[in-house]
Image (tube, rainbow, N blue to C red):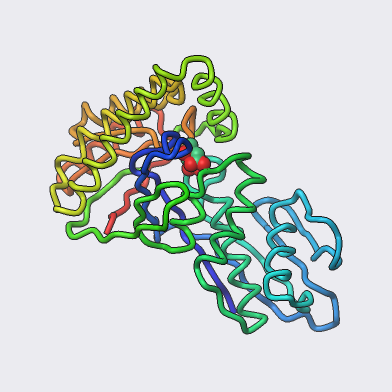
Length: 310
Ligand code: PMV
């Protein structure tokens, strides 16, 4: 018995989304966290083996205060939600989603685990409740997350996300191709978000102007996606990258990869997620994908994978 959750990528609007601006994110179904359930032969309680994180944990006793460990807290919140005792199973988690690189690995691992526990308990989730629990876990990773990661990963659909507003999912009439290139540098979203907050507090009018410009791009991007005007997305991505640079969340590596992608014929390129490291995305066509990928690798990307957004 197993459960899974996919990765995600933010196409537009990261950071600005923390300040109430819209952002667009899509699931990446080719990358997954998987939680596999085995029933224990002897009574042994609930054991979670997170092989990639080299962690083995046991379900905290009921009534214990909430743990600071994301996996333990996931177990606690899920069992509280279902008002259930820990089942006698071992859940092994594997993920092929790179950690700390803007692909939502933490949220995906917690989501897969929460889904696995519900399978064992023979209970079902409504997306809103599960998303709220994963949001609580995201707080451990990020401090003050906007909620976009848990939303897109739990709903597993493209989302136009505005904090505090009902979730808007939307469809993509004309699929498009992205390359996702990893700088190989992991960076903590929490730090980048905190630095933007400091900038905002030091000079609100200047930062507000940048956030407003990002908002305009996100609105235009949604329109381009929904009308199938895929080529229009490229310049919007590149402009969004420049504005993120003004918020100080780009890095020399991200700038270099974005430039390399454009030189090799990508229609647009930008960092994605918290920035300072992690991943960037490039909009390509079937004709340019191979040459852009090659250029990204020779410009220092440690890994490039292709995904169709559909
Ligand atoms: O680094 P990621 O992919 O988890 O994305 C963070 C996105 C931010 O907008 C920077 C923060 C947030 O909570 O939305």
